[in-house]
Length: 288
Ligand SMILES: Cc1cc2nc3c(=O)[nH]c(=O)nc-3n(C[C@H](O)[C@H](O)[C@H](O)COP(=O)(O)OP(=O)(O)OC[C@H]3O[C@@H](n4cnc5c(N)ncnc54)[C@H](O)[C@@H]3O)c2cc1C
Image (cartoon, rainbow, N blue to C red; front, top):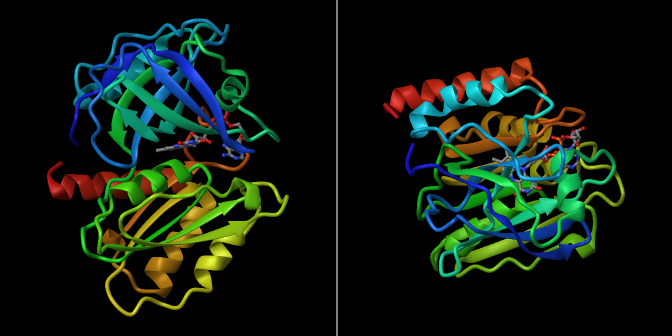
């Protein structure tokens, strides 16, 4: 793993809706030490249960100490322990020492993070710990790419498109509710954007994205797949790319960003644990 973790309690600087279900929140304060490590980089955000400043154990000494830090976090009595959720750093603004985070406002069954984002105002404080990579496999330059995900993956996909070089090729498939949720993506590369609409069906129940990818022809040459979104959809997509298209597992980066009917506090399922073990085995094999 690369980079070092920054722990800070920034506050909301600005709030702007970039779509009917996506709210961009700019955070600033204490972020001067933030260093970008990847286009799809994640941070843990912490939300105080009383709406004030989240109280946290001191930051991990380094990335290797994260497990020990997590044990200290869990040891904080539950009524005082801030909620922890994972978000992508959509954009780092180094000149202002600010970060943009795009929150999906999932209103049907909101959790602490989406509830916080729905009412966030300048001055509100959040805990921040990051960055860390969100996908363990990195897209190799020159190889055509397929990005597929739902709107939680859109911040990472947009950041990825922005760093692709001219001459690179990428097909991007994103599932959103409808036309109003589509965002312009900027890229110097040859990026073909395909939007898939749920049309009012709840996120996590629609098969729009999985059906669209399954309907694509098999690639005729090397391809790098990048998948993120609801965990079952990501699994179905990964099975298709590896099982049906025959891509090498190492050519497919995948991450379940959320789980239907489960919060981020809920324990890993057997499938989650199996995937985590697979990733750990791969990292050990790489000597990471
Ligand atoms: C590496 C990584 C990067 C991520 N980046 C982003 C990002 O940039 N922006 C972003 O919005 N999310 C992102 N996510 C997903 C986000 O962490 C989850 O959606 C998280 O569950 C939201 O927390 P919550 O408190 O709102 O809901 P929780 O308390 O975790 O869950 C409450 C309920 O809401 C449901 N739920 C959770 N998320 C959604 C959703 N998107 N749509 C519909 N129902 C949902 C759950 O199934 C559960 O029933 C990322 C996740 C990971 C692992």
